[in-house]
Image 1: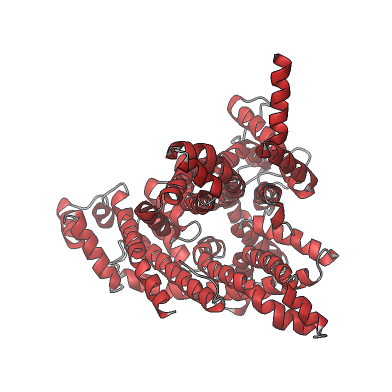
Image 2 (image 1 turned 90 degrees about the vertical axis):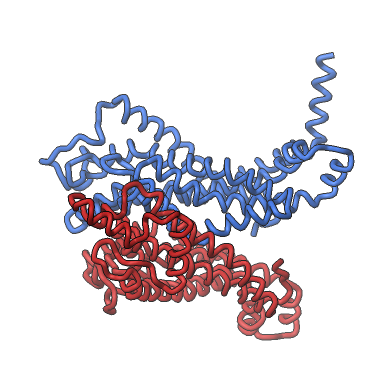
Length: 306
Length: 302
């Protein structure tokens, strides 16, 4: 197990280097001189030159990259072009909000998806099962931002039950979480259903039933445990995807998370902030995947992840 | 002589497992009602979108997706405006009709581009293995480190928002998915005994890849292409919704949703109809894609 973890960590090095190179290139492929944007179009040449000097824009590319990498490793992503505040100070509070949204959405997804999937598998081909499978298909096919708009329309504007925008108060949490989590819940419901059906057909479950073990015990103690193995992977992946998917949800509900920061910064051509925020999401995603791999390995000792 | 050769072809067709497999495949597909529903919806949308494209560019019906009529702005659905009008008094039904080929076109083109690049990469990695495999798949891992639309978003932020740039950005984001799936299938096929036998007979790599590996991995490629078009449509709509994709006044559905979000208090229908259309298109691709998968591999069916 330890060797597996060490090997996986070593594999991360080229991926993380690649991610930083890609994010670093963003600023240099973008048309327009960042120093000019930072100084303002009408700024005197001397100011632009001074900023170029400060950002090191005149250094050779590989030196610039190494500086970028070294600073990023210390969580220093430079300063915002807009307000000269360190990028990290922009990112940190926003990241916590996005993380909150992601965690709540994951909980919503797991609880709803598992429950729906288990009941569907136990009552295969029943009215409930068929209805649920149709609903999950819609859930999978809906753009999460459109679902968000419709939820705002019905539950905030028409019924007035929830606040249409924002994050933090009790009446602001549920709609964004449903909007972000529904597709994931649909995926997990389908996964759980098919995984449960697989397990239920196996010999050891028939043996347990033949021995006279109560049906509830068979389902929850014997079947669910093994059916969960593939589902756990999907749950982990969902958590990662929510980090990226929250960009749209945050935009719909005007939540000041990392996603909204990225959009605003792209529109204002504030490259250091875009770079920092994209890098934070990508690196978090890579580590979430690592944790998923390790837990999959722990849950299922038979798998050889070569 | 002609009759004899016809008979022979007939016999070959009966014996050839691939031809027989195709017959069974279509039989299974026809039995799958939800897949058929998806298929018919897609065929219908295909023709409607062609009509919409012709109408938008050559004015068959004399309607316009950009004609503004401020006296009729923000009106609800009616006999005159089936899906109502937007904040500039533009007919939403006409806009949806004229924008359909853009939504479908971006989805198809992005997926096609991703396949053109991703499939050969996957075959190379799976077939040749070793260092080539390591290099290709590590690069794919790097691209996969950006969840969801993040990579496409980053690319669009560099290229700028336009229909072509969105297509390119989504295609790049999809390449690793194709490469991964194709690599896996290639690895499995490569290990089949008959491929070994052909190689022992002295067949060249090119012949093995094109005549034996590729036909065997077509089914996962087709299934994933179908399902990926759905994802590509969602991503494109998302980018346009954020204002970073297809730019107004082009009647792309995601951009229309972006227009409508500012008028939700007065006119909910502006955001309802374009979104509903996205749901129907994506649902149709998902139904058809799932049906294809089940028909290709009946063992997976539950």
